[in-house]
Length: 450
Ligand SMILES: O=C[C@H](O)[C@H](O)COP(=O)(O)O
Ligand SMILES: C=C(OP(=O)(O)O)C(=O)O
Image (cartoon, rainbow, N blue to C red; front, top):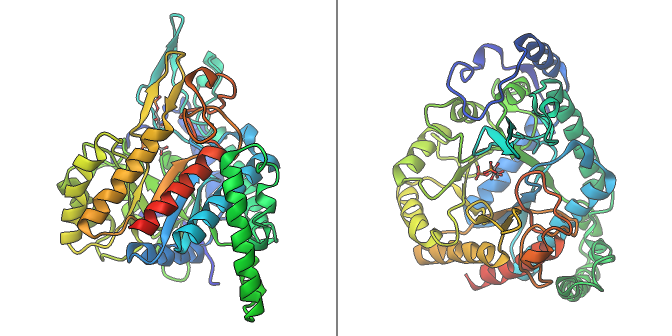
């Protein structure tokens, strides 16, 4: 593979003078400059050629030939960069991928919200507890989660920790996905600690037996077993903190184009997608495949303007629209967007984030989401695409491989009163492994019925 994007963006940085929403107020500009200069000298985390490969695969999704599974933490944390947590997350995504590929009969492009998802846009810039007001937590890349004055001061040194945490995570992900662990003949092994205790684990085990039989059949027919040994897996995160993303943006020696080498794919969030803002200018300039979140207030004109800015060549795979309308709005708001975008001739990937429009606060004070609402938004998304004859391209989910109790419902039901038991997210509630697998089975059914 041709590889690299080598030199810093320099004069090509056309976004730095534009207004950028949701940026930290770094207390010491000189300290920030030293950090970004150091980051600019660090090696890339991903290769430009890999970003191109993902863009091609997303092109297949845009054309209706594949399905995008994008998922992982709401907010990764520096103290969670451990082998167990990373393996559990990956295992869950691989299991979901196996379910969707086999039960949905569709190739699945697998992209983690992983190895860089350390920054969070927030609704409020401060948080008040017991009469004390402090800056809000903006992710481990910016400040600390602890509710103390010292922890909440934005510290640019954290951007270097973000780089190193991303590198360590990606290193392990690459080892797992190419070193034998992701071999499709391991479908049972991914489920070992899970099958007995959970209905979705048992359902998965039955599917794994079928996959095994299919693999044996293919072996007997002479298929190359090497084909199933590794899996293509890509990294993604929200490109939020532009000081970091800019420092990680390099000119590709092959093409002279800019790539953000902090992840294969980056997306722009609902709170930072202003057409005249720095984030959209940044996304327009980099050659990575890019996503944009579209919430319920998005108009068709907004969507078309985003396409003109981000995908002027109408290249399938370049732009992914990640819709997050809410279960109660998706059937009303999505059709006009899909209809007008399709009529414009653009071939974007449409994917459904059924998490961010369905958050509420439980009486206990925990932010949570109902599994049924998550499912209903995905159902609405499929219904809209079926009605319009367009392709429901994928799902984008906040999940973890651990048995947390953050979202209510699911086959192995979690009740509101259970939330406190293992509520570990640093920001928004995630599906646990069992809920994630439940969702994969249900989405596979929807896809097959489509
Ligand atoms: O993950 C998304 C946002 O960062 C999150 O929903 C914002 O949460 P807040 O409303 O608690 O700030
Ligand atoms: C902040 C996020 O979502 P949104 O921009 O859709 O609110 C997110 O996906 O982490």
